Amino acid sequence: MSELSIAYQQEEDAQTFGGDVQDYVQLLKPRVMSLVVFTSFVGLMVAPGSIHPFLGLVAILSIAIGAGASGALNMWYDADIDGQMQRTAARPLPRGLVSKNEALALGVVLSLFSVVVLGLVTNWLASALLAGTIGFYIFIYTMWLKRSTPQNIVIGGAAGSIPPMIGWVAVT
View 1 (cartoon, rainbow, N blue to C red):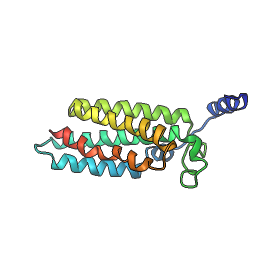
View 2 (cartoon, helix red, strand yellow):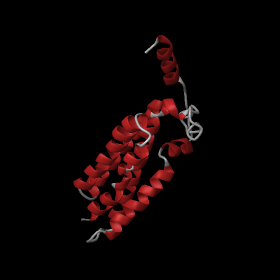
View 3 (spheres, rainbow, N blue to C red):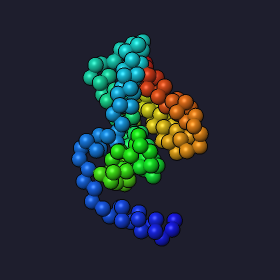
View 4 (spheres, rainbow, N blue to C red):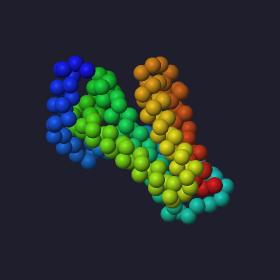
């Protein structure tokens, strides 16, 4: 890193950001999260067997939180390019409302929380699928595919196909 970029990073890290709750909610990508909730709910409902309604609700919330964590980690990693695109320039990180460190911390904490809660409430296979989905979204889609191929959304869509399976496995 150049001295200028190191100084810029230190200045960024030293700023007081003070984003409001809505800024942190936006980090979770609520529109994407709603699709994940819907598809995981469908998987939960069509699975053979049954689950106590409260446990089903906690499972859906855990999956939603995992999806939100993925969104926060995606925005953390893409902070450098989000400010350059019209579609993403209004996100909290490019606008300086939330720091990269806050987005990273939020994403990591919510990832761990969602995976552990899902495992404790349903089963560890469902939890492992959730962890794998988060990992795929961050490492394969965000860090690798997005920056290497215009087909990223097609291949990265595999992460979106797992939530119905997580719902199914949570029941079975």
